[in-house]
Image (tube, rainbow, N blue to C red; front, side, top):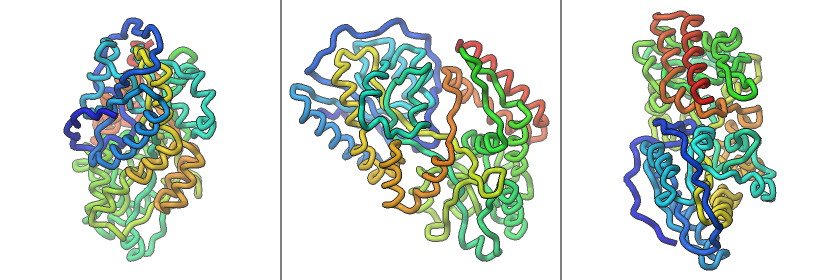
Length: 434
């Protein structure tokens, strides 16, 4: 195995919510490769993590297994920065000569990369792969566009409710069982302890807000057959928006401080002891463990509207795909399977804490590490995904939903006006994407 020089890691972890493209590129011309070489060097681009060495060890083992079973094949791995991935990957789509054979990509990038013509359709190979039958349905959805499969899920990430056990015990409150209880508990705690946010929320925390919308029966958009139509301004979605934005104010998380906060900032507030609750991912566990609240917190699923229910969470995560331009298609698909198979995902969980995308491997992980259980329960209750459209990258990068939340919590617009404006921007993106 040949390893290229590692590129410096970005400042933030990449797994906070599924990754979205930050740059647009024209749709590529047909870059399908001719032939299917059975020997030679395969190039792989994977994401550089904060603290990448454990990931490298797992990948090295998977690559070694692959090379051992594929005589004459070598693998060259390069770890690329997350913040420049969109430009590099789309440039590779347009220049097959410099393109890798296999890439890691954020699961919200799937539809855009398919439209760009960069990813190979591996539907037949995926369907014939014995391990694939145990893939979590939501994870499989993240590699599926138009009924065709364009890769294999590598890991999944969902969010749940972190809360301070010491604060709850001191005030005699119980973990909330419904969304109304969540809101009232947050405000009760802040009233009793004004130095703490009851529940840390962020106006720029799109993936933390989505469960409120979904729990009320709302949707981001509705599929119309060939494209999507915004549904963020629907009656049920507006109820969810109202519930989330009600948490911004002097009685919980002041808008002046919290309107600009994203997911990282809310988790940091909790980890540093400035919040009694926060909506964080399984991937937030290490950061919380390293913070001031170590030993003084627990995690439960984020409650839904009905008492005892679980709010649908966004299923983030990353996938591994084969480029259409690869001249080693068969080898590349086999390498994709090696990098995303059950053995590798189990090792990746142990090394990085990334949740496996296979239901049986996920159950084993929960038995091994109790902290995983609330996230497994959340997945089991029915996680959701963003619209599988190339428009989503533009919608996310343009901060359409954060702008909506911030307009509401600042008082510039009411929920109806702000959601109508957001819907218009989303529809324009959907129309442009086709």
